Length: 140
Ligand SMILES: [Zn+2]
Image 1 (cartoon, rainbow, N blue to C red):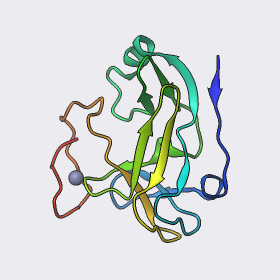
Image 2 (cartoon, rainbow, N blue to C red):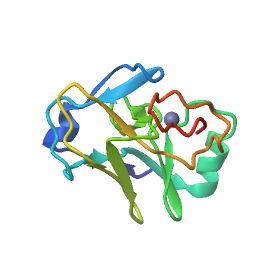
Image 3 (cartoon, rainbow, N blue to C red):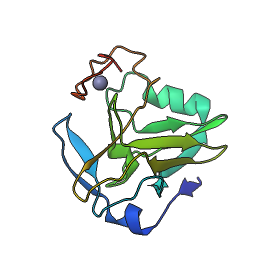
C-alpha cells in the first residue's frame, strides 16, 4: 500500500502535546511565516469507499478525503493527524488530486497550536466545537 511521507524544516519541528481545545494537538516547533507551506497530511493512501468504511462510528477520525481517494493517518505518532479544528484557524488545508497540504494563514509563533477549519467533516455537524474562537460556529 502506498504511503505519503513528507519532510521539511517546519514539518519536522512539529510537536504533539496536550491541547486546550481537546485531547492532543499539534504545535509549531519553530516560527512559521505567513503563507509558508508547513507540510502535508501523511498516511496510507486508500480508496474513498474504504475510508468511509473505516471512519464509520469513530469519534476521532484521522482521515482526509481527496477527490477519488483518501489518506488515513492511523498509527502516525506525529503530523497533521493531530491538528485540531478551529473556527478561526491559523492554517489552511489545500487538497490536490493526491495530497493534502497545509499552509500558514498568518505568522505563527514557536509553541503556538496549529489549527485548521476542517468542516465539513465526518462528524456531519454533530460534534460540539470547543475552539473558543469569538465567532465559533458551535458544531463541527
Ligand atoms: Zn469553533
